[in-house]
Length: 503
Image (cartoon, rainbow, N blue to C red; front, side, top):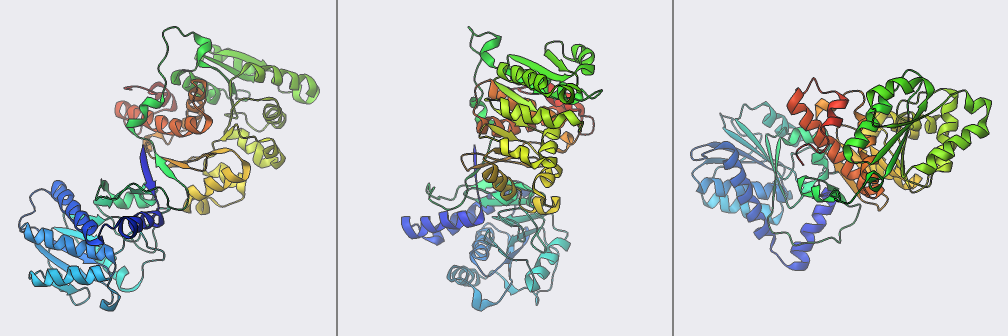
């Protein structure tokens, strides 16, 4: 599991290390500069005689850059420091590092009076993680200058200047790095686009921060390969009933693909029994597509003709299930409202509300009043916009905040799907799913995700853990499918067939 922090939280960790524990800031700075030098050499190759321009701001990120210049100079590089911003705003550490550079004869010049020549490597040490406003003036000019150079390698110190450490948005202008060396922990904004794209390859360097969890704000994390132990092994004495009963309430007339994909994914994830509850017309093809699935059907007109009988049917199926998927491919026929309402009222097991289930909630807001703590919602940005009345661009500016607000307001686990997916958990923490790839941008991929989450709950995971781990497993399956099929040729069923492949 990877720990993620915002810029503000990282500053609190830094403050604890220096102010409470007593580690001198110059010690941390030295280790940071050494790590950037090592990672740059690892990325570029032999650095001796390389021409390097290091852009240093007025704060301690700039001081990191000035310390880096000394290390590179000692290693035989032609390092030049370009200071950006007024000298009177330099921190004490910045002044000390520049003084050392000057005593060693390292060129230190002001950006603006510098006559540019060819450089092999550019280092961005303008701003750290504390940037809180758009980059303007001479700093913006320096960013544009770095962007226009034809250097072989651009390295960002801690985070590319101009990227929000919390949301990943570009604050006016930003550096586009080939390599970012960040300190202590990954910064939350480095996982979200467009910031993620501006970071290039990311290296996390341990520079000696002591363990500290007393910082303010939400807790963020991301799963990685070390978390495979979350998935329980199958017991040799088990049977199909050991691994749960998944009910998939999905599919409209002539539209059974979403139901099939969710059911297939639930089975591939490990569920013991999967039943699809759908309209009668879908039964013949579902028998053919997925003979392993149990099938239950209803005439859609029953909801209007005999609501009590329809309700009894739904209650019976909900009583059978240990986890329910509600919504994929349901459409917007009149019976859908009653189906969603009856499932939410009848079920006492975890319910994953997706797709047209969410659209029904958006169209009939009173349905959200039936949400309980065992509900997981899985909206993409369009569905989230309909649920909240917010614009998709506004949501994308702060995906963690949007997911957390909906989770807190509704008392549910919220899986907000995008190129990077955020899971706002009922325990108040947020997980970030960055394991996916562009090959997964295909119809039906979200239906597979609901099936994965349902399958994990059937295996015994809690709703929060199933949602977080499900997003990670789904993304990994997409990567494996893309390796076999190519990034343009992956279909949703290829993702389902790749679940747990190689585990």
